[in-house]
Length: 213
Image (cartoon, rainbow, N blue to C red; front, side, top):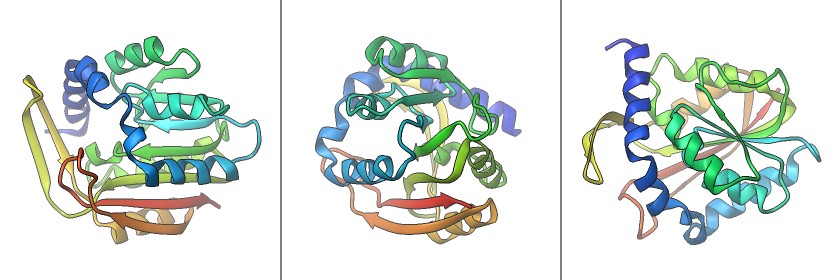
């Protein structure tokens, strides 16, 4: 399947589960102390007053968490249903429908960005393109926090929470992701892995904090 058809399938799948996703995960950061600490570290280093982007934001709960702490948050998602839910649930966030490979943002618009489990739907050849596009939207020295499932497998779902979907979740090697980030014009400042929290799927989680150069 070509990349455009894959993205269409991802979009439709997230449209299908948007309401269920929100009901289940809206408050997930309450049980993720390490994620909250990383988000805080990111925003404290962003240029004061600059927007922080949540790329692949889903229903916007991370962007909403940032906005509740005084951050000018922008949520971008491929799924129009997710954008609609986010706009309803988190009115303090600027939501935009868009693709990681063609972000609806100006050059240097964001002081920092997060991409939490959103790069896992990209094909291997798309990862570098996405990081280059994210770099375009960041200010000089802007930080990017990326998280993903660590490994090498691809998990396919044709049913998700009782809904019919067609979507792949790609596990990624942290060392490879770090190399791709550096090739795209970032310096990786932090690498970390953790075990899953009790309420999460049983996967190992990886985080990379990278600075635009």
